[in-house]
Image (cartoon, rainbow, N blue to C red; front, side):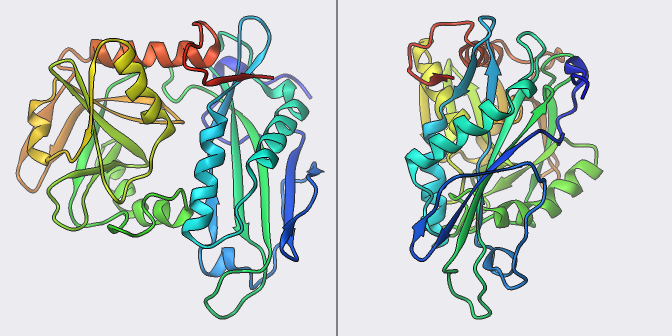
Length: 338
């Protein structure tokens, strides 16, 4: 197989050599298995298909200029998958077994880790689902874990670009005290109507408001929202948003750069007070926001008036990506080198 065109990789799926799997049966997890197949055999009555017993994670591996592969904060992904499993009553995948599976799948597919300086990375997708058969609504007795990888290009071709967002009031992604804090597929399915409607209207994504009162910012499409004002990094606190590992990292980086940080409820009206705004997550790291349109109130909140990302947003972005690739010393202890 020829080497991929690293400079022109899409942010999409590409077949790699191997994936790693593991099965939970008779009350315990088995040994890790290696497979070269892109497909799985699944029972027609599996709870993952019928009752949404499914959770996943997303993280990346990066090649450093020293030729060594780096994983960024995989421990937090392991913890979050355990949290998600508990939230929808699945057998949690053990922390140490998660680490073993992660290291194994990256080593087996090492030739697909994009070279340093290409802007590309190796995307890693762990998946846990109910594979046992049930017809009644109840947890499965069997579960399957798998992790596959695929090389992906940068989310933004040609550099980080500000995007436009649309406030959504007529669709809820998740309810308070529901599954919003868990990384489960149902939350993403629930968000698709709003996201597709926004994209059909020429927007990059949608901003969801809290489901109870429609007064506060919740998720920003499939990512977390942040705003910057008076040298302060502000991000929503809510019972229904996913705790983004990227956002968690940006909060610490902002503090290390001398910024104040606040995680609290963010009223919609405060959007007009921010000097900079963005969405953050594994895929894009940071998507700077150019403008947010509130069609119901006929308001447009504008940022990046010169068409360029804000200076503090880019400072945060550059610091985080430098840590991920090994270009800066990891004083936080976030990077694992394979």
